[in-house]
Length: 231
Ligand SMILES: NC(=O)c1ccc[n+]([C@@H]2O[C@H](COP(=O)([O-])OP(=O)(O)OC[C@H]3O[C@@H](n4cnc5c(N)ncnc54)[C@H](OP(=O)(O)O)[C@@H]3O)[C@@H](O)[C@H]2O)c1
Image (tube, rainbow, N blue to C red; front, side, top):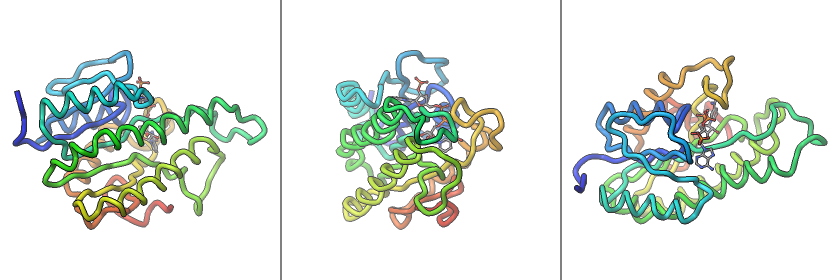
């Protein structure tokens, strides 16, 4: 079965947290929702099409994109949500472990790169292609708070990739943005966070729906506003 008429979205890391809430929200609205999980799928949501995919596993990434191509023929939106925060918050430099850097860079940067590279042909087949890279205020080079060396550096690299790609593919009509969801109650954000994943997902869905090419190259908040987060 092909689902060529409906808008489609691929959300990586949708097993829990923001990715799962966004997949639920999109499936309830107008989207053909493709969602990925790593190895263990917590709960299968209604109307969500699932794929097992570790973003660091190149072959799985290619297989997922090929499966989506066969099902939908195109992809309107790619949300690079899968991410890790391997180090303890406020960890001093001297105590950082090499493995934390490797994990952050491997997943948040290289993994995202692999997914985008594989998905670009499918996005180019869309009438209104959009790529949303889930960034963070911790990426900022100019507004730093707290120590998040590996995570922050990985998200800064993701932002750099966002800006470069936005510039490169703008002529082809592809919108590429970095977006920070805010501080969200998830395994990563912790219990003290101010926002619920459900509320954030609803705002994100609206923002994604409204994204235009003129937004490309911007660093947005969940409401689609520029200027709240700084490069
Ligand atoms: N929560 C916040 O306050 C906050 C703030 C700013 C930015 N963000 C960003 O928002 C995104 C989602 O965060 P979250 O709070 O929802 O995090 P989370 O609850 O920790 O969930 C992260 C998701 O990413 C998946 N993932 C991790 N490594 C992966 C890999 N190698 N391949 C595929 N999937 C992988 C996890 O899969 P498993 O379930 O298999 O582990 C999980 O589903 C992240 O990019 C994060 O940096 C979050």
